[in-house]
Image 1 (cartoon, rainbow, N blue to C red):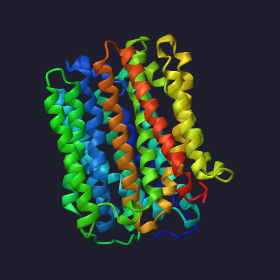
Image 2: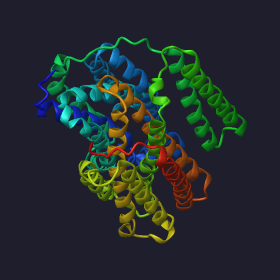
Image 3: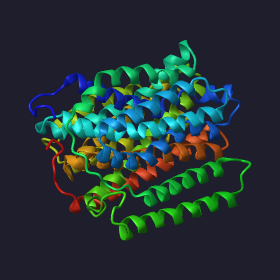
Image 4: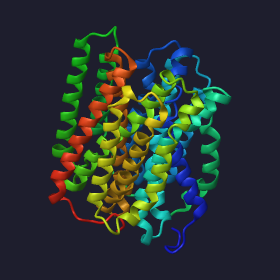
Length: 458
């Protein structure tokens, strides 16, 4: 392990670059939705699985990958994840059908799931102890910046080359980052815990997640029956309840450590992450589609439209620790929620927002919201345990974030699909997420008395 007083800046930048890259892929195809529907002659309900296939597999595999990283070390998981991610990014660029592209994106999601805990575990040993409070902010800061910049870079790619380069862009970035960090991570002296992986819990959780999103897909499919969707919802409910029973009551090695699940603060953190992520990803995916189809923006202009979100997020993320010197972490999250809610309140008036200038404040407020919430949330979650659990804690938090984002995309698509036109669908989407954010804020306020008053900077 490196000396506690020294930071390897090259290794740190390489780790954060890969964190940015795998988050970039969450929203990379937001700008390309219209292009993909035209190129592959597919409807919006099918194209959304280019997003949700990646996020869903990422979310389902990130906890098992966290256990494997703790057991076998982050270096081996880094090799596995980087190999899967890069190979299928390369193959996906040659896809001749939407099904092949979705399959490649699903495989990339699995590769990303192996990368995330390996990166988080490595970063915990790269940073000196005095800087451990920056761990959550750095990882989620890089990931949030990746989410926000995905549409911008993809817009430039679509304008000057082809959609395939959105996939191929990943390959050189991933390989260059690995060249700088692979050997160094292998030299880190990280203790391996040799845990037994709970295969039953993994299986049940995967069945529950897949059933939920397939049910949402069936509802939006004109050729599917409501009975099929309700059957899938029933499968989701049964498998999720079985997972909870097995993981919390029966098995000696639960998928999520009981010290986390039994912690009220950690449960509130997960709830907060899921609701914020739904609102964040929905804006990044659906508003560029609106700008291109209704306001006739080019792909570059639609990508540039997200700059206010990127700037607000990038500016606030590193400052959140300083803000926490004066305001308790629970109040920082409260302010982040309020910013997101105000952004959606403004978006409810979308029918009278014919020009982009009137949408800017929504983009700014969304960036402010996630810039305040994500770094504090991750730091709080990691603070609940020591370094030895950082991979699984990071995996759980990011799993919930991805599930929230994927559910946000699915619900947005469903609202648009069931509405008479895109404008009405976006209004229904805004109202839905405004209600969800208000529920999240109410839960956070009710939980104030039970939360530990820990400042974001400690």
